[in-house]
Image (cartoon, rainbow, N blue to C red; front, side, top):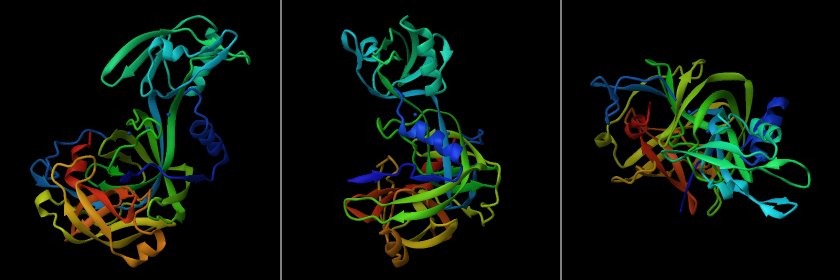
Amino acid sequence: MDEPFSLQSIRCRAPAFRRRAAAVLGTLIFIFCMAAPAYAAVSSAGSVSGQSRTLVPLGRAVGVKLFSDGLLVVNLSESVTEDGTASPARQCGIRTGDVLLELNDEDLKSTEQLQTALQKNGAQSVSLTVKRGARTLSLEATPESGADGVYRLGAWVRDSMAGIGTMTYYDPQTGTFGALGHGITDVDTAQLMPISSGTLMYADVASVKKGHSGTPGELTGDFKPSQELGELTCNASSGIFGTLSDTSMASGEALEVARRDEVKCGNAVILSNIRGDKVEEFSIKITKIMENEGGGRDMLIRVTDQRLLSSTGGIVQGMSGSPILQNGKLVGAVTHVLVSDPTKGYAILMEHMLEAEP
């Protein structure tokens, strides 16, 4: 069994943001994920206009804050009414994984907005515009009130997420970045989060929970909401992408992106940030290159660096996006940890990650 990485635990230094994060992440109020300017076409070899692409490998932990495009339904519930129990959302056909786009022709942007609109509407029926996969549906529901007098749809929804992730690369030619090596999915539905906006923020790693067989470890970080580093514009299955406004952490040497046929089984290194804001180089081995596996599982890797094994037990959640270097080229990024053996994990080829760029 393997574990994809998610945005990891945060301790925020700004009290106001901490309260907001608690309201969004901790309170699933009846409902919670990015993009870059268009570039020239990128080939499967990671080249632009026929030339080899060069990128600055990073490995830096950053804070990630996302706001969804609509409200993601993460669960359905029953409301206790005078007549028993009812779930208007379920009765009108709403399903877990749907995205609520509009209520009475008004765009839905936050859980608070939804609550306010429901209370103002009262017991009258409401029209809902709902996205389900590639389809857009028009539904009608009648909210029910409980003993507390609060009108509800009976749907838990989510409008945002926040956490710690690792930046993979910076492109000095375009001012854009890529991170994580996989998309950000909702923890309850495993659905790729639709994004309306997002930001990167300065962060440092405060502590590490060491991984053990059967229990993945994780990085815990502090970030500063007031110190924004860039904008997130795309959340894709092979990574998150955007533009950097603060390039102070991206001053390293640009390396050529390796073609798939240049990546070999054998020694390699990863760049990762497991303490403070320091990026370190750790040795690994690429033990297998997969054929058409997909899902960010292009390579099987094993940590061989004793410093990393001693500190983290191997690969931990939050290291997702750590760039992999081999023979002076950027070959990929860490994406998964094997739950049964945290010294091992999967990685995505860089050429595949670049294919997901907008």
